Amino acid sequence: MSAQLDLICIGRAAVDLYADQVGSSLEDVTSFRKYLGGSSGNIAFGTARMGLKSAMLVRVGDEQFGRFVTKELARSGCDVSSVIVDKERLTGQAILALKDKETFPLLFYRQNCADMGLTEEDINSSFIRSANALLVTGTHLSQPGVYEASTKALRIMKESGGQNILDIDYRPVLWGLASLGDGETRFIEDSDTSSHLQTVLPLIDLLVGTEEEIQIAGGSTDTIQALKTIRSLTDATIVLKLGPLGCTVLRGVTPESMDDFDVFSGVRVEVMNVLGAGDAFLSGFLRGWLNGENDEKCCAYANACGALVVSRHGCSPAMPSKRELDVFISERLAPTSKKIQHLHRVTTERISRPSGDLCIFAFDHRKQLIDMCRELGVDFSRIKDLKKILLLAARTVASELKDGLNPGALIDDTFGLEPLCELTGIHWWIGRPVEEPSSRPIEFEGGDDISQRLVSWPSDHIVKCLVFYDVFDDSALRVRQEKQIQSLYQACCASKHELLLEIIPPANTPISSAHPLDVMLRMYNLGIKPDWWKLPPQNPQSWAEIDQLITGQDPDCQGVVMLGLDAPIDTLVSDFKNSKNSSTCRGFAVGRSIFGSPSRQWLGGKIDDEQLIEDVSNNYRILINAWVNRSN
Image (cartoon, rainbow, N blue to C red; front, side, top):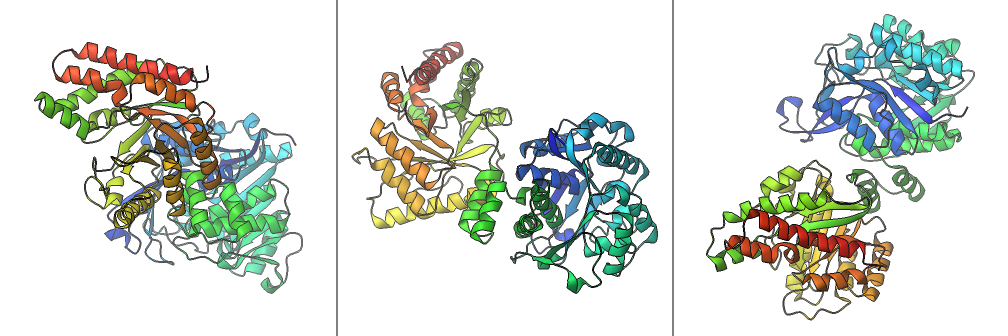
């Protein structure tokens, strides 16, 4: 069967709020992290990361959380064309704590929530037939409306010759069998629930569940008897999850004892959080199953996915990428290994940005503008007004950019907080400095606890750090600087912010063409892999050497942006030409060459706001045109 999609998922898609404080009861938790949640949402997300063409058919609320769910699904590569906005219901939530390895207090806020509002009318036959397989989850069989919608979709897929998958996903509280505050309980025996689940089994081709879930589907706490009952109702392949032991795949006649199972062993890891492990397991299994791979391969993917997710915070963000999973399996690495952590960072955590060259207007300057104000006898408060006007110039020119060119800005939060907030969320490349200006050894604004500062930053802000560094510095100075950079890099990894490292030779240091190369190699040897580099202009040979170094050390690096160092515009035009053959130089990040002279005139009262905007805009345009024409 030829289809546009590999898989359509129907079921829960909501918001998970995971406690930050591991070890706290839910009553004592003080902060949470927000993730995409819901079993079907997680599986759609996870299979998309596995490289499958997945789609989600669900309702979300007409509010911020509904838009978040849709955005997160799309970010993974999932088709969201059938995500329906429900005007009457709110997006569901799950709130949970991680008390210990066995205890996960969980509250579901799902009373008449959006994903449970799915109706038969929402099931479009053409859309269902556009996929090779359909997945539904047990929760969407618990209420009449979603039951009817799910079974309609299952019948359409069956008639079209596709594959139907049921993730039993048994949550007693969502079947009304546990108290509202008891979302943690995973099994309560109930004959009515068993009978109800069994009505869909004849439509199913792949049935997946834990031992307790198989028992509820089969109507017996004896697993073998439950399997036999299930087998009497369906010829489906049954995947029985066995926790840390692994899993087994059952076809045909049910064995008389669990000792007769062919068990595909799990991966032993240090457990942080078992919630969502089943969704990860199934995402991995479906990668193999939908691509026609054998049981051993399917279960290897499944067990490895589950192992990676239980070792991390959250479910959907913990899901591995296809590339990460393959390396984890082939090299038998620990989830905590630097290689796996880096692969997860660069293949799943980065903000999606448009391709093309970057034209970054840098006006994050603080000390230079303070010095300018002192020279002119102007109050420092004028710097904030200046940066608002510089933003107007930047936005004026950005609106003129042609395809293949992307606007960006480097802005500080000392004088430029308002422009920073204005640009956030509109898909600009935004860099934000953390260093104390001119500090050497480097110090961070607000103190050394940089991780605490990054917690308050929007996710799309790139951490920019300028370091005056030379590999021939005094050893004590060099070690101090290196420790600071390492701590910053670790903080960025933890907060999931990208890092731009700007390297400038210290004052009175002869600049050799090899200087950036030596410093970059030293950083890589220390295990520091910035997402971006900001480097001084280079000659063509040096650019070739930098390309080779980055490709060899970190092929996932986002690239280099060229700084200006207050050079005359004519000089930068020549410098741009030197980079024309570089594969890693992505654009420029220039400041004072654009705004320096006009800003001095404005602060000195020699030109007005309109003239400042015009002069800065013209300088910015000249550099953009020089970049575009650097190959001529």
